[in-house]
Length: 283
Ligand code: NAD
Image (cartoon, rainbow, N blue to C red; front, side):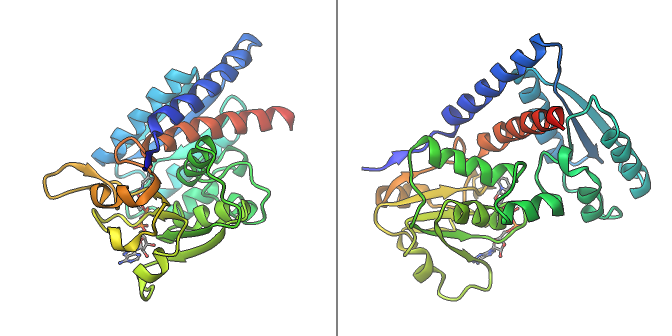
């Protein structure tokens, strides 16, 4: 019998523990601030930024929004980041991606001070992650690790297969599972005999971005299946990468979409902001 991993429950648990800590700090006169930059008018980015602001309100952080017009130059954006890097009242900075095409995304990510890089995307923080010395790592894979921890799913010695090798999900996911002593395989668009590889997974993480991509024949009996994908199916309904109805019976644990990994990402953003603030206090 499979168990559904409840991302709403785990994300509430994490946000509530962040909220408690933030309140303690507030009572000592210290407020935590997250600065969010959005460039342009992408509607999906606007929804994400609004959700991040709401989460800040919930946990008791101050949130600063910098909504810049589409025609903002790279130089203007970088100088705003410089200003926020130098502002001691700002603990975390994130720039909502994607940025407009005339701005170099990599430059933007790397301009954010590693100590305030709450998305964990900068080269320094990615390097630290692979060295096992991280404090700020990418929120979505960190959220997956929290789900596994909450449900007591041991990673040590397990065959962990990730489908997807992006810098924001697949690769950091691999580093985090490896750090917990999983035997990790990363699959991608050039992987041969994908189903053969995935059907050996004790823990299968799908981060492809294609509705219904993972079918029952790709999944081992009693596997843990984590669906990171966020897609719309033919009827316009939100769904993941996994054919949930067909796959669930084969699994021991499975995340639904919505209500699985999705809510975890923002919860981990709040946790990362708290970690950044605590680290800045010590230095
Ligand atoms: P991406 O497009 O950057 O990467 C997709 C990966 O899938 C690539 O590495 C590619 O090699 C792999 N892939 C594509 N076709 C494949 C195939 N036929 N066989 C094997 N691998 C294949 O996407 P991403 O940013 O990593 O996001 C992946 C999914 O996760 C998307 O649906 C995205 O919306 C979702 N996502 C969710 C959250 C969240 O908060 N839950 C956060 C980030 C991304």
